[in-house]
Image 1 (tube, helix red, strand yellow):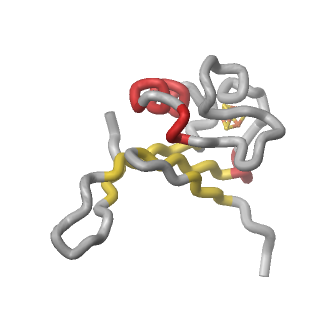
Image 2 (tube, rainbow, N blue to C red):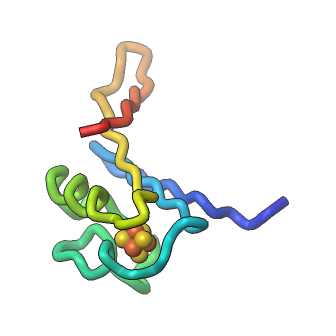
Amino acid sequence: MGKKQVFLYTGTEIDVEWDERLCIHIGECGNSKGELFIAGRDPWCQPDLSPLSEVKDIVERCPSRLLIFTRRQPSNSFGGVITAQSSD
Ligand code: SF4
């Protein structure tokens, strides 16, 4: 079994996925303001520490387009969480 290369960072309202294989480590995400990505922290990405608009903005600035955000919808009547990927 290979090394894990796609990482999912879950938040209350939004999740962020990072594909390490495509990352050029130019640091656009880590250099952004706010607390979403902090180098050296574990986990380095914490979606609950930034407003949704900031998470979306930072994810969309990734030059390799390898960061993906997924908005979480309120729980359904069965107690599950519905996720929907946004293209906006
Ligand atoms: S902005 Fe994208 S390519 Fe650059 S370091 Fe972050 S995840 Fe990697």
